[in-house]
Image (cartoon, rainbow, N blue to C red; front, side, top):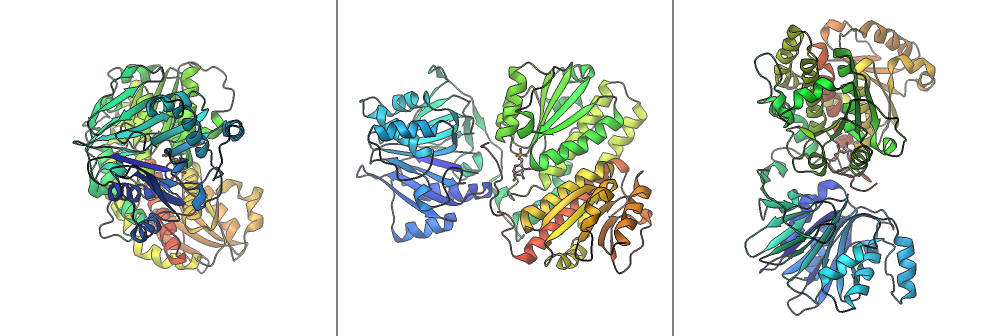
Length: 612
Ligand code: G6P
């Protein structure tokens, strides 16, 4: 989704801006652009449809540069992907702006500005903001005051960066809903939608709060809150390693991230397991265990892959505690009336911590005092969700660049196991059971390593999928959401239509689709529901379906011409969803590679969905 970079320095900034944009490419976009105030005092821009590489080529042919600049990768919301809709947008020669988010009242504002004589060159909601700022600038006030005045008229979500040749020592930014961070340099300062963009130039950051506006000079930063009061926001030193966003020996980030899972899972467990229990300190709240002891109900909210993690979590929590657990996608939950609930723990799950719908659901529950405490399972420290929640359980996946989530998902599952054990401890569960689970969790990195050994076999198998247009994924119990995640991966990156079903539902509809053209992928560990699942496989086999079954030896599933078995290591039942996810990730990866799709940046998708 849209990415913003900006810089105000004593050196030319275009190269810094382009590198920042490259580092934001993982978010997904369709066009890119950069604008600078030249040393001669004029505002100029360069924009290109397609990748940042296309913008780089254009700049090589027609160079522009300056010591004050803004840049953007656009993910189309208002107006088709086209150069004229690419950011930065200008109001005449005086205001240059980049924007992430959606201005909801742009239609009324556009009409008003047209009546005032403004001409529109794009179909975007952003150009409206540029002209609106110009309306105030013309009154002779500073750029900061003009942005402050304009924002009072904006409805919706935005992160904005604004420059003007009127003030060559000023970069103005504003944040409402969409994330924005300031990077601190020496005699130079930067802004970005996330720290990834700025890691080559700084490791010191200020995270703006909702409603903040900042005036950034080369040597000074002034921040004002939603009421226009001067405020100071803490400077945070980031330990995020720049090299983690490098490909290394791997062809794609997705493959690299799949293979990083033993380490990221180990990191998520590290320092969190004592001899025979889970340490409550991992929630970062001194009274965490007392709070959990009062929990009578849990509501999990998330989107996409994180939602699937939540669905697995529900099976685990309800099987091991007496706490009812509900799971819902954020985009539905946020618009639904909620009956009041007693002693509810509200849990959000998110890789980025910036997903607009998930954040809105959290805001809603807080506004309505609808829960006892909020907790986020999140991969990005200092993200909006971690800052807005009472407690955070951080996944330690490290930066995830591939749009299709892999290591973030498995670490979310690990975090849900940790939460489940903490709830068990808080509710006084059987100590031997807690000890058994913590002992099993320690085996997880090694079990994932073993699952990764399936890679060459899965690569061979994937050839059978490249001509297919449809596929079915089956699972039962907590392996059903794993099948959902497997289907999501395949459709996201290979563009093959993939649907997941709880295997018991097969005969209520999808069986009608089964023929020799339909590959049916099944996850079948030897757990309690195995015999039921085997009957479901027979239903498929007798209709000529082509089955691909991931199972352990103990499942005793016999291969034949139409039933291919891939042997997964035997795992404790509670860990099966985590380990069985790995071969499904590898399957979709290899199918996508063979189909020649853009694996790390699939069409139309974004890594972090910061607009509704
Ligand atoms: C986008 C990404 C998915 C991700 C979802 C939720 O759709 O492409 O990979 O699962 O957003 O993102 P979050 O950061 O909240 O986990």
